[in-house]
Length: 255
Ligand code: PEP
Image 1 (cartoon, rainbow, N blue to C red):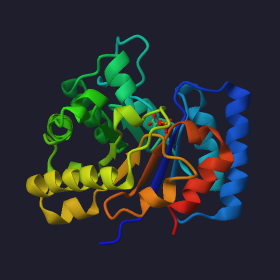
Image 2 (image 1 turned 60 degrees about the vertical axis):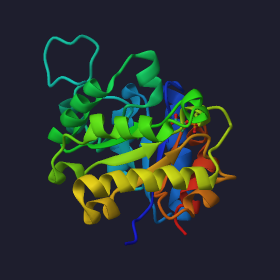
Image 3 (image 1 turned 60 degrees about the horizontal axis):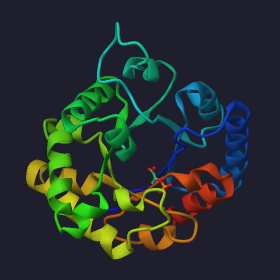
Image 4 (image 1 turned 30 degrees about the vertical axis):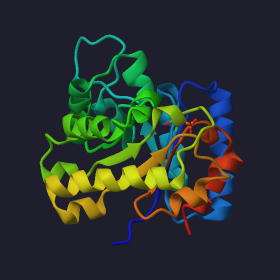
């Protein structure tokens, strides 16, 4: 089964408003010129989401994702942003369980499962991140770690909900380090994840699941990574802040 590719840019906590506006404008010009056939998503910080969704609605060149969402529906949760709020401004997907949130904000699999539920309740596609730290890979326990993250974060879903989920494999040792997983390493884990999904939900759902690779993916290495049969695109951090690089990655995901 041929899956269309997805390229999502995670801006993290970068750029001020003017810079965000400029990046969106540059990106629009490049995407308009290159017309990549992959699905393009940008995930700016919360204060710039509405700017991005307005542009997305006007030009239809990309979709907009958030980088986080509350595990709660609404009410007295100071500082939180709900899935309903995101939905109300046209956000269509959300990164959930990024390793930086797991590490710095102690988000565990149980909390992440609630966030996934919230997103799905408002028809927001969760881009659910999994991945091992260096020590776990060196000990050879990375498959166990990833299995646990996938099972505890996602496998409570019924098939109807699961079909709206995207998974991103992001080896933590490759994020922001310039050290990319080799295409073979990425393929091995992606195939493992698809195998887990096949066991749980069956072949059809496994075959339609998008699994993105993230971790120092850039304009120089994207083609090789995206050529792997189970790599369905990328979640891009640093390189998504440079319009030329991000547009080039999108182009490479379109072949
Ligand atoms: C990320 O944070 O999701 C990521 C993949 O970062 P980078 O591309 O900078 O490694």
